[in-house]
Amino acid sequence: MKIRAYQPSDEAAVIGLWDVCGLIRPWNDPRKDIARKLAEQPELFLVGTAERELVASAMVGYDGHRGWVYYFAVAPERRKQSLGRMLMQEVERRLIERGCPKLNLQVRSSNAGVLEFYRRLGYAQDDVVSLGRRLIQDD
Image (cartoon, rainbow, N blue to C red):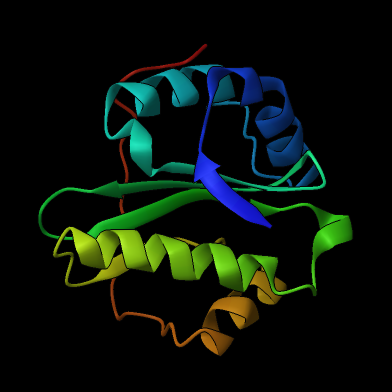
């Protein structure tokens, strides 16, 4: 798999990947999320390709205190090939280059398979409660 920065021509493939991976929610317009990311640290919006096919994505951010990963996805038919591990290693490398001391991510509590994936990579559940408040409605 080759990992590179997102390009505008990737939009349909990325949204299709997110859809098949169950990452799209009615309250988040994926096109608006992509546009927002391209306005802030676009070099940290990564995609993975294999044989000219987009097979993975990671939307990464660093605010000077913590790194965050969103829309982390690997095509279902490409799982169990270490692509997710490769992509997370690249995410971590890029954040370390920026001096990021800690990476946070959120996983839905019902997603046992993904929780196990991150545990195998050395991630542990923090003793925190995640809170959120929608500031802009995507309609």
